[in-house]
Amino acid sequence: MLCTDDLVKLEPFRHLPTTRLEWVCDRVQVIELPTDKVLIQEGDDARGVFILVEGEINLTRRSEGNDLPIGKHQAPSFFGEIPVLTDEPSPVTVQALSDCRLYEISGEDFRELLHECRDFERIIFRVLQKRVRGLESFIRGREKMAALGTLSAGLAHELNNPAAALVRALRELPVAVLELQRMNLIYGQQQVDEAHTQLWLQARDRGFEIILNQSLDPIAISDREEILLEWLEDYGVKEAWKLAEPLASGGVEVETLEELMKPWRDNPTELREMGLHWLGLSFEVMSMIQHGLRGAERISDLVKAMKSYSYLDRGVQQEVDVHQGLEDTLLLFAHKLKYGIQVDRHYDRELPKILAYGSELNQVWTNLIDNAIAAMDGQGTLTITTRKTLSQIHVVITDTGSGIPCEIQSRIFEPFFTTKPVGQGSGLGLETVRRIVENRHHGSITVSSQPGKTCFSVCLPISNG
Image (cartoon, one colour):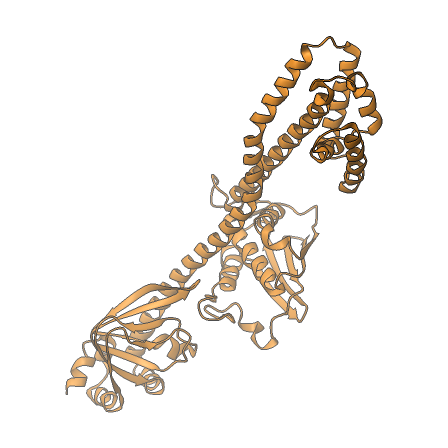
């Protein structure tokens, strides 16, 4: 019989007696699948096990809107046993790369064969184990890349503003410095009283101090700006509003300007206003330097956080400051947190460092915090609590999101289990968290959830011996 000849080309079916092979052939459905035709869509319910006797099949999985190839089957081959035996939706999309001929064995018939023949069962489960491990390995790799992509996008977003401030400051500084030098040269050519020069320098230095220490709040600066604008206009300064802002930021009083400008009020040359422009431009230059410095410090902080997060230049296992790991992770998620999510920290300041795999532990914080942010949909409170017991530390991450339905709470750590639409969740995020916490660090993770409050509690040994 042609069908039995096709079946025995596959190792598992060689262990079935001829009567059983004929029984299978009597019950299979023959499928002719043309090139490019989809046999199974990712997320479809389990159908049966397929025997590929002619052609080539492609396996893909959807991730971030893209169909990623994860493997192929060339005749003779079989597939479809994973959803049949796990009773889960198909983890992949199956599509013909060429004209294909297949036999479909129903899930019920396939399970009956497993129960009747131990050798057949043994080989099938060996293949199943290998394929599941391969699929998990692929998806974990994609999870790491997706996490890296998320953090990279956040890092790029956070770097953009300080980098732009630094570039803007460096671009504008040369012109401003040259103009200040020109004013200084003109002023130096005048017969100026030394005491009067000191008044200018004192006003400038006081302004520098105010700008560097941010001594004035925005409301005070705004009020002062209005008063200065009126005085500058009365003095006859063109486009007085351009000077009012920097002079206000430097804390200049009208009385100071009256005293400083008294010797120049009747001067017919540019010296009549030059001192005002010199003082305002000096404050602008200091503000540029300050903004550029803040930008550079912010960039430095982000780079340090990313380096600390990934534990570059260090061994695999080392003493880890859990608080630092949490803070590094929060910093890298700042772009998602700052528009509506409040972060409450309740840290045990006596928390000791623990022996751990630093970069893997940060994967745990990344997954849990990212899930919490997503659950709150941009609005809510993220609470992080740490405490120490005798030989363990506890980290509790709580969000005020919609919660996890009771009926699925016991399954959220299972491989491939996800409530997200196809292509948006691999189902390995929390499974990875569980594996890192329990298998790699000999700790534990638990969850409690109700609408408005979800808590993930991670318990880790201080010495991971």
